[in-house]
Image (cartoon, rainbow, N blue to C red; front, side, top):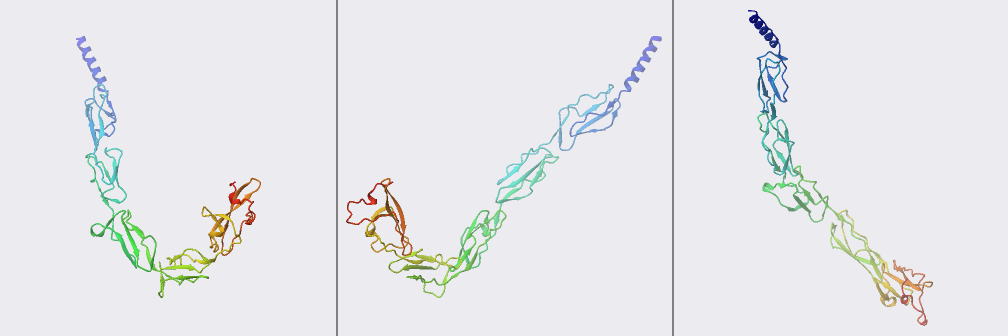
Length: 345
C-alpha cells in the first residue's frame, strides 16, 4: 500500500510541475501575423501563422501547439513577396524599375517627341498584378503652322489633317520687297508647338549717290526696295575702291559705298618688281600708271651680306611711296648689278 501511495504522489507532483510550464510569445516572422497573439500560452494551445496580403508562405509549418516543455518548435516558415509579371517593353520609351516584387512601383517615361498616353507609374498589388495597364508612348504632333503676314510657306510636309511630327520643319519666304526678320525655318517642338515665327517687313533704300570721278547704275523706278541692286564704275585713270555691285539690305542700307580713287604715276622709270608672285618690268606692266589698291614689291640690296630682299609699295588714291632702300640705276651704268639679280637673303 505504501508503494502505491508513493507512486500516486510522485505522479501528482510531476503533473503539477509540467502543468506550470507555459510557452512564451511566438517568434516573429517577417511579413507574417500570428493568431491568437498573446504574451504566453498554456500547454495544448494552438497558434496559426499567416502571411500578410501580398506575400506567400514558403517552407515551414503554419500551425503550432504549445508543448508541455513550454518551448515552441523551430519554425522555418518564410513569407516572400508576390512577383508581378514582366511589364513588357515600352515602345519609344523606357520602363524604370528595381524589381517586380510587391509592393514595388515601376515608372514609365517616353523618348523626346513622344508623350505618355496613360499613367506614369504602376504598382505591384497584393494579388501579384499591376495596378494599371502599361501606357503607350504617342508621337507628339503640331497643328498646321501659321503663315506670317507678307510671307509664303515655301517648304512643308505634313501628316493627315496637316499635322506634323516632332522635329519636322516648315520654311517661309517673304514676298518681293519684304525682308525677313527672324529664322526662316520653324520646328515642331517636343511640347507640340512651333518655334517662333519670323516677320516680313517692307524695306526701302534711298537712291545711291554717284561717286566722285565715277558713275552708278540702278533700276529706273520711283522706289528702290530690298534686294534691288546697283552697279558702280569709275572714269579713266581711276580705280574702284569697293565692290562693283551693291545690294539694298534688310536694314534699308546699301551693302557698301564704293568710291573712285586716283591711279598712281610712277617716278621710277626702270625696275624689276614682284607683282602677284611674278617678276615683271615696272615700266612695261604699269606704263599707264598703277591702279588704286595695287601692290608691288621692290628689290633692295643688303650690302653687308651681299644679298637682296624685298619691300612692299602700294598705290593709295594717287600716292605711292617707293621704298628708300630701292636704288634705280641709270641705263648707262651697265656695270652695276640690279638688286633683282642678286641672290636673296
